[in-house]
Figure (cartoon, rainbow, N blue to C red):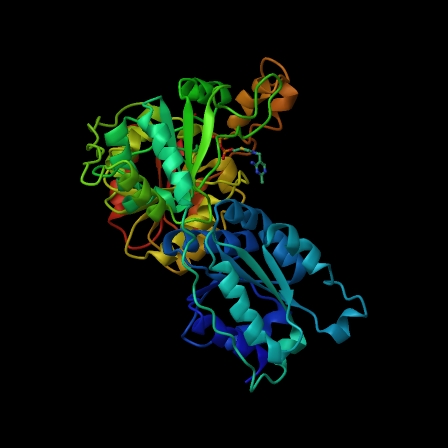
Length: 516
Ligand SMILES: Cc1ncc(C[n+]2csc(CCOP(=O)(O)OP(=O)(O)O)c2C)c(N)n1
């Protein structure tokens, strides 16, 4: 048994099921070890796809996947989606290949400061010192990544530690730690706030946006009159008809301030108070009313089900029925495509139990609430703001949930960052429908130009950095070249029909939504 075998064996022993990989010469022993059927290895054609896919896997499975990245440059290519995963509290184990120590002193071309690249975005970085220590290091990495909230663990694997003998190495055993219990005094203080009857918004995030905690929060809302909200971006929300819905705090600062202005109290569950995505001249960073008070009910590393149960008990609300979202009054999607008619089409086309990965930006950003009454589904957002997250996350989510349809809603500008994901989806025949909103523009930046005070509207020259229409991207050809059949739609009814058609397919499909 060599170090690579010890590594892969320990990954499998500690519950890792999948490795999103982009290998190079230094990782050949790891590749050989991956021949075990115990771990599914999935080739991704860019490291940002590997790391985004690991994020998508975690969001659906609540446990880490691993990635295989080629030395410093491979890790660097994966960093943007590691950042997004970190902001979403997703755990992952990155295995980064490296030269043997004896080779490093000759300064070979691929040498770089891997620890230096990995550390800012990893919670844990370690370089395997010997083949004998790899099993220990690997088990430690998986335990770290599996903490709540999820953590980014990066293990650097020098070539010689992979190929040397690892027999007799020792693996520690870790028992998963239960989530921390919230402090009882804090729960009582929040109960008092709710008893006051003053206007209160409870914001739920991360694991608190799942059905069981949402129902507990729904009981509190039904019993006290408080409202339930989400940040603009949430890791995963179980939503749709029959579930407890969250009101989404708007993205734009003026709209968010208008939404928040009457709340005297904000109660946070696994999140913090609402912060603007960007700083703008003359607009505040914190968007609540100046006299509003923020109360933490559950910290991000605590158990929100327990916290909400304690709150329901403290308020004597056991047995209260939460208000459940009614089915959408389905407005038949029709006519010209705009954010509202797109939402109507989505509402008609999202199948039961779908996973929706949203990076629709200006095509869906403000209209996603129109899909609240769709069939029950999961909604995934990007908490890190680095675009190009959704095609990889959809890939990983579909690997994690092959029996569900994953729908990736993505702006054309965002899609271009990680479109290689389609190739992996075709190769693995994943049930993903990618909907590309082809407005030939970084449309969001047009409004941000004036929001920032750069001028009333982008100048012609500025527009050359914002429009992506010369040349026009042929999305159907793009999909076809990577084995994903597609269709182009120009009306809302055609979009709904295309979604429904794709739902019946086993493999990936692409829908180009032509928006100009
Ligand atoms: C890695 C990264 N680079 C650049 C940006 C800045 N940025 C934010 S949105 C955006 C354009 C998005 O365009 P598209 O996906 O087509 O959506 P649209 O705005 O047209 O709705 C850009 C370039 C970013 N957020 N992340």
